[in-house]
Image 1 (cartoon, rainbow, N blue to C red):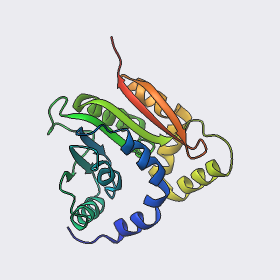
Image 2: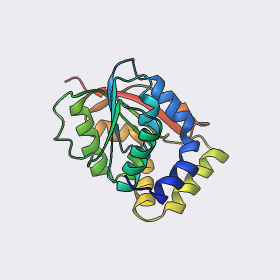
Image 3: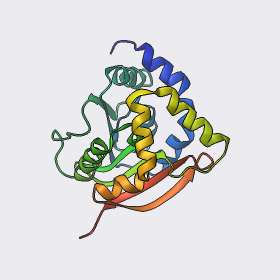
Amino acid sequence: MDFSLKGFFYRLLIDPLLRGLRTRVASMISPGEKVIDIACGTGALSLEMSDRAGHVTGIDLSEDMINTALLMANKRRIHNVSFGLIDATDLSSYTDRSFDVAVSTLAMHQFDPETGVKVLTEMKRVARRIILADYNCPMNPGPASWLAWGIERVAKGDHYRNFRKYMAAGGLKKLAADAGLVITSQEEKGKGVFVIATLRPEVS
């Protein structure tokens, strides 16, 4: 659990911008539910959900983020959360329906389309329902959307390329369909820049 400078700056600069999304997602968790937080980052959402959930498991591929999450959990003495360095495209360490809910916030747009489908397919296998918060597609025009696009441009590289692919393909709606999921409810947040969606497997 080494201190992470990257995690510190993410918690200082990025986490506050997503506070509203986290609060809403956390409110959608029923008391006592078992939750897995995919691409949990600094663990901010996992820790917030711990107030309602029976247990929260946060996973991420960044050691910096997991270390930051562990440090924050220990500092706040929260004991019904655990964090692991796990690839979300392979959740084979968890059995089918191990969780009541799988959540992911502002992660899907970072994946290339194939990876995004793999992640959602695994989330569908291990959880009874899925909650996703990510960019709305299309975003409502205005300063908030210009800022969002600007932030993504600054990220550059694969991150920005995957964001553009995500938006061009139709965002969560396209990813969900490709993974055999249907959106059962959704709501816009952040002046239409973000969307929070609840998903369930398609009924054949």
